Length: 612
Image (cartoon, rainbow, N blue to C red; front, side, top):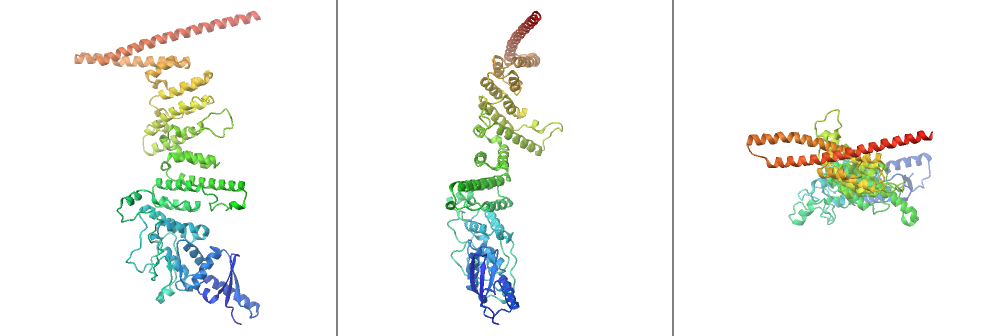
């Protein structure tokens, strides 16, 4: 019975190819095995000899009919195929799937694609990105065969060098050209029988000798006008200026989120500065939010085939997905490497897109760790989506959460610095650093801005004022100013609430002018003013007790008077007399009030007795 000479191959149920078995089978190991299996089945069924072709079905073919067509062209051209960054991943996955190794033919497709990919180190930045983007439609095969890892490692290596795409060494004539691949007619017999080495996704090179290949002007490692990297030997000022910038941050906006994650992981592995990585992600997000229906993790939707509402919902879902992924990647970096202005903008975008709570929590953690760099305009954020119309105008709860994150980070940094702490004390209470002082000044300004809000409760004001430890403020003048504004904006506040907000101010840390203002301020409760007078009197007594011996000792030992000290002493005495008179008048008023209260009580008791 004559053997069939034709193959009828159907790829992924899409397209059928009729090919010659003498051309295709010697190079495709998988088709050869399928052909023998089908032929054996024909013989067992003892079918007639009129069969002219064998039908085979290929399932899960990477790249589908397009990849199989490239394979057939390679076989029909005698093992020659022009390769480029846009089709080498497709041919590499197809060759692996069809088992086109050296075992079935010298210079087979798998060997050629490996030779092509081994030169990726000398490719331009743009062509490496094109190769990575072409792997998107080949998942998970491109990941399994190590092509994606090879691309991201090459990109990270280029970024770490901050140099241009190196050109091939002219002396290495035997190096393979990654554009047009064809086996040399003078290939030795040992090369014909040698099996292809296994492809390693973690290596960017193949350490082996390859036959000579013809040169092509479209080589990926040739000078590329679209490549933004400066030349390694260029001395022009413009090139030196470009070298200072992150040229490798560009041209990544067309990558999918999955590919972007792989690039970021590779950049971190190669110890790229986190500031540069954060710039890459922020630029990527800015460009991606303008693209609709781009994510590979979402179902593709054609705008013309659906109504406007459905397409809008799909676009919002994709944008939310990209935003959450970028925030998650930024959260894995050093938090201080992300610009504070960009973080506040990210938070605004996340709220607009109704991002998840975990996404917003990550953003707040990154903001809180560098709260000392924030300005008043940054944290004056209006309250949105308030359930109660009588709620405060500004998002005070957000500021409280940011303060909590900042204090936790400050305490951790202090502990890691090795500063001594007592085991019974809270580390936050011992913080004395410039960042926490800056936050203290910022909070005083913030309290003064939100104090006029008539809906701001006393409990919220007290929490904001008492959130920072005592070491955050050298003086409480700014805090007292905010307190005075709050009491002025809330004239009908209950006495208990007034005392609550006043307890947040340490009146011992007020300046003399502020203390004088407290004495004259009718909005301050009387017991607070009385307590302040008593403390000031104790201070004056202490100052007088330490000042007189110093004056006498100075005059007796040196024989000269000390006019500055005498003047200061006279001023202290005058202040003491003024405060004493104020204290006496205050005590007289208290006595009068007590007498009035006793009279009212007696009058009430008589009225009750008469009524009985």
